[in-house]
Image (cartoon, rainbow, N blue to C red; front, side):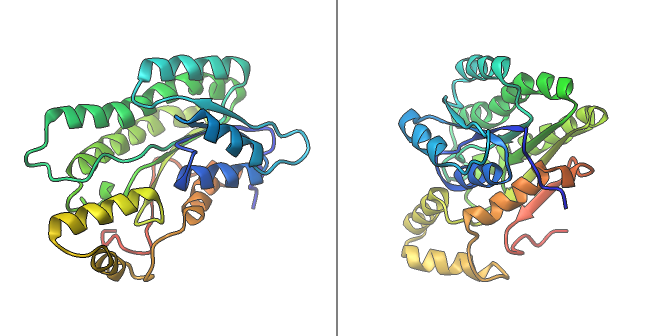
Length: 261
């Protein structure tokens, strides 16, 4: 199986922690030059310096806020002007938990900007280089809510569906150019995001965090939360030459929790 990413440049968003960090490490381990993107430059600098490298691999960082899409666009366009991106991993922290009922419209606008619009701006910046080099992979880290809405994540459910629809449309448009676009749908994963969800659900439901955690684990056939590196492995496969004929799919990495086909 061809997983070799030597000579490829990957831009990994949300790479300061969790799934994004694990993905950056995995892609670097497969030989890619990796640029890590998040808001905290000091953290990114340390991460880039610690990524696996062999031979001439060159890693870097880009400090940017996904909610400021104008500055995001400018910074990524400057990056690709010097070094085309062949692999884009769109990944950003999810909207705050809560019901749709009573949600301020501004929360939807902010979520769409951070996820849908930021993803679009990044794709627009990197796709021309992918076209010139005749190769490209775009992987969007979304959520299993694309298949089944998750209770208490109203804004997130709505936004994730929009991103999935955008990605499917883009996959169809880019396929003739040999560029694939896929979505990875994490379930409950050991990240700060799941800690936030557990804490919110415990507070709103009058239960302890231990009770909420146990109830969530009980819904997962494999009986545990995922480790970030397990999700990263799925992302890395979709970025590899071995996945050249896979595009436009939603891949759950959820331990079997999603009940839909």
